[in-house]
Length: 103
Image (cartoon, rainbow, N blue to C red):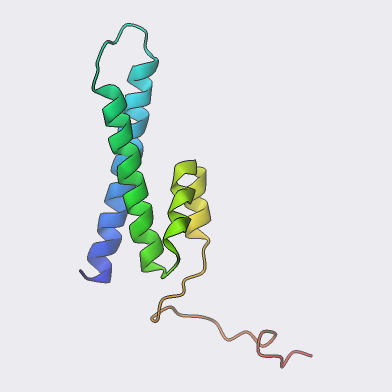
């Protein structure tokens, strides 16, 4: 799977997971609904979100435990977004202070 397809799959699964989770929680909070599939739908939404976060952390070449930031959605997604990219094709700026030349 190419990086572009993996990024698209990551984005779709996170967005779909968030939508499914919040819709199921919205309908579960309504006292008049009696759908037994809503908790399962909420679990499916959480699984989709975590799978998208797993794809995201694997694209950044980070440990899989960073997926747990996805449980803090939507705030935790910022935590994953701010992780430093350790993949081989990541572009980094040349920082003079990190090379020890700025002393």
